[in-house]
Image (cartoon, rainbow, N blue to C red; front, side):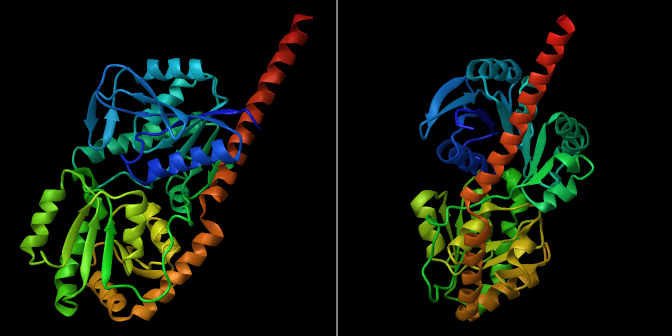
Length: 395
């Protein structure tokens, strides 16, 4: 396998984007450093006219220009030609693309022209109850995604939830489930009781309202009355943050809710270590990386019944699950873990054990390496067969 080349295509690069982008970069780094692949990243960049070539942690990276945004989707009319030139220059053995966000991964599929293409898909449905975006998403999921999946040599679903949701679009015979992972050495937490602090980590752009922070603020009005010294720390940023801050003040939560802004690296890890629980009130999600980060940090998760979250959290094993939008049940779950530090500690310990057993990036990179190797070897076999056939025909 040493010396194989892979072009990793992702809509954004961290710190932009979210779990999809962190997944793509973490797996790409592991393929480079642990499995002998020569990795090149391709992503969207600033609104310039030309492609920018740079490096990310020593890995060659191309940033393609962005002409405009549609919801959270960057787009540019020149991507097809730009990607074809990058493919010609880098000569990848396989293209490994991540979606949604719709756009770049799909263009890369049609730019491939004979290079095996592997799609990793990270979401069940894009529908968020927003017009006209849901109409565009319907066309994407039922037409564009189906066509790209058919053209793909293999499809990787980031959870069994995603695989089941798209069973009619993804062929079972060429689909593998590889969930996200986490750096368990980076995200760790102390044993023993934690402060009465709840943690929300998520994007606060207008297009990310499905993360459910308004529900959490509504539940906090009940929780604050019972636990006046408890604190909710909101980690993240975006154009909707000022409105959410005003909503917290309007609900009388100025003292109980603190907006910490965007955090990453050591600052984010320290924030996990200082909290008692992670709260994930999403209305639409799949397999949020923040759940694994929290579990690795020995935090229980209070999460909505969405995507793969119930399977990760279990029935009061590693946290508490509530129905989407059920603010009363959310408030009860928060109240329980604030009142019972020992229960929170037991759930957090169980989450750490699950992460160490099944959800490290190294484990997921090994699975990805196996898929990419299978695809490239099959493509090489077909090329050898074609050359043999041509040679026989020429005799």
